[in-house]
Length: 90
Image 1 (cartoon, helix red, strand yellow):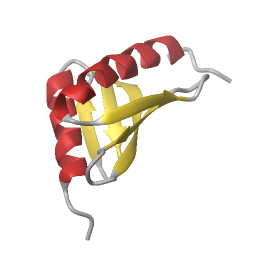
Image 2 (cartoon, rainbow, N blue to C red; image 1 turned 30 degrees about the horizontal axis):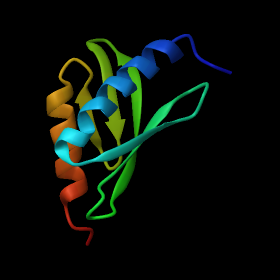
Image 3 (tube, rainbow, N blue to C red; image 1 turned 90 degrees about the vertical axis):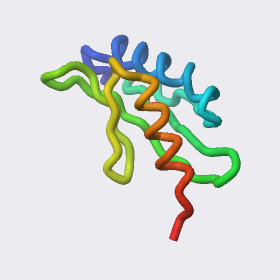
C-alpha cells in the first residue's frame, strides 16, 4: 500500500538521481508504491539503496551504512554518496 508521501518521495529521489552522473555515479529508481533509489559506483562496484523520508526539518535521504543527506542540498548529498561509495571495502 502506497503512503501519502509517495509522489513527493519520488520527486525528491528523481531530483537526486539527475545529479548523480555529475559525480560519477549511476542510479535507478525502483519500487512503485514506495520508491527507493538504487545507486552504484561503476568503478568500485559498491552500491547502496537510498530512502527518502520526511523529517521535522524537511526531507532526508538515508543510506547504509549510516549515511544521510538533505533533500534541500542535493549537491552535498550527491558528494557524500560519492565519498561513501569511493571508499575501498575492507
